[in-house]
Image (cartoon, rainbow, N blue to C red; front, top):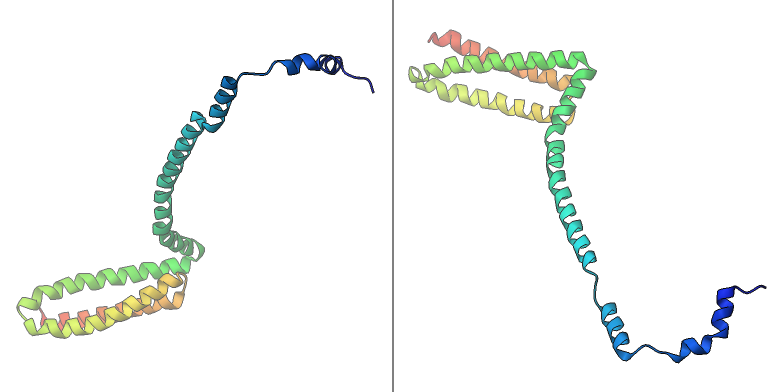
Length: 171
């Protein structure tokens, strides 16, 4: 093998290189520098902490949005998938609105017929309890036509009750 010229020079003059050694001050200085941590690493770590906090702060609203509006997206997806479900939901909303309007009329008559309040409230509470149960079932499966139909039937019963009361009291 052919030697490199630099390697050959070093081998020939090794005794000259070994003759001069650095002073103790230089070794002390080198050893102190080895123990020190570079300042730029500390700065990088601080920036990484700040970046992590900023990332968390920006992710929290996204997570809240995701959780809060996932139910609405499920509802809209079910409506987009099945127009019959949409029609049933519109009917349910119509009946609910009609019942609340007629209840407002009856509540005006409570001053004239105070005994009426207890009777009507008891019947309506029972129907309302069933309605809430149906509504919670609907949240579990938004496209369940039977549940929506049962909700409509519940509102029809409420409307019939309210209509009967309005016909009897003529307030």
